[in-house]
Structures are given as C-alpha cells and as structure tokens.
Image 1 (cartoon, helix red, strand yellow):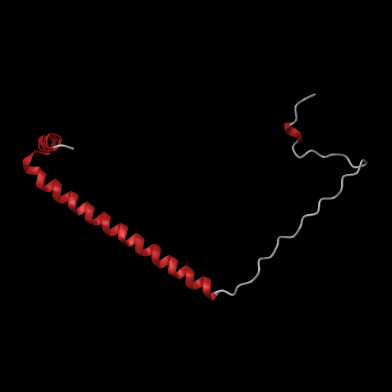
Image 2: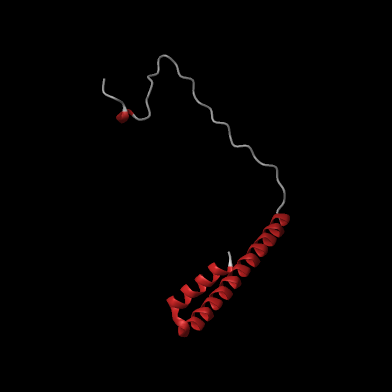
Length: 94
C-alpha cells in the first residue's frame, strides 16, 4: 500500500467517526485487543496444562494389552429356513 491509499483510509476513518470520537474508538479497540490476547494466552496455558495432566495420568495407568472383541457367529442359512428380510415394509409391490 502506498502513502496515497493510507491517507485515503485515514481520511475515511476521520469522516466516519469524527475527530472527537476517534480517541474513544481507538481506546476501545486497544482494550478489546488486550482482552483478546489475554484470552488466547489463557487458552494456550489450558492446552499445555491439559496435555501435561493427560501425560501424567497416562503414565500412572498400568499398560494392559488390548482385548480383541468377541467374534460374532452367524448361523448358516439352510434351504429349509425361510429368508426373512429385515425391512419388508420398504419392498416394492410386485
């Protein structure tokens, strides 16, 4: 951005807010940015604290091998047993 564009932006801001309200607006913007930075820093500290807690808890738990889920056995379909369809209400009429 050149000096002409920056000057036009400053002029537009002065016209929108006026020279009397500009210090109040900049003060409010500064406060908002300070609050935002504080919240972001707090969130980062929470993330670090949570990660540290998870590592200490993970280290305290005994390590056990994972247990495989039980195998499901499907009964064989014989020619004598009728085929049951799971959703007969959705079948197309013949």
